[in-house]
Length: 157
Image (tube, helix red, strand yellow):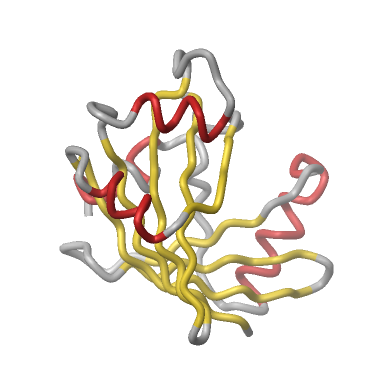
């Protein structure tokens, strides 16, 4: 099992719009309502990632780029809307990759699991069975529940 530590900051774009446009070679940020920076630690290596996302719950466009530590801290100076600190555990099993998140900065204990699957309709039952039998956890699909989006999670938990 692999483990990574994440710090995620969702920020308001006040003074860095030009930087975002240049980094992603865009003419406009229209449609990208989520701006996030991440610090990711795996073993002794730290990397910094900038992400832009469109709105939506099930599927959304996502642009991502690794950035320098200096640029990370520049974006961190923007107004922060919310932040999440978590450990992520990667567990491959039966052809799926289960990503379990353990949230560290919430008011209540919360774990979530994400499974990327492009054939979810046909595999949903199988994934539920693996979660129940192998991992022995109760399954609740929160894909369409906006309170489980990482950008909102600190408001509810």
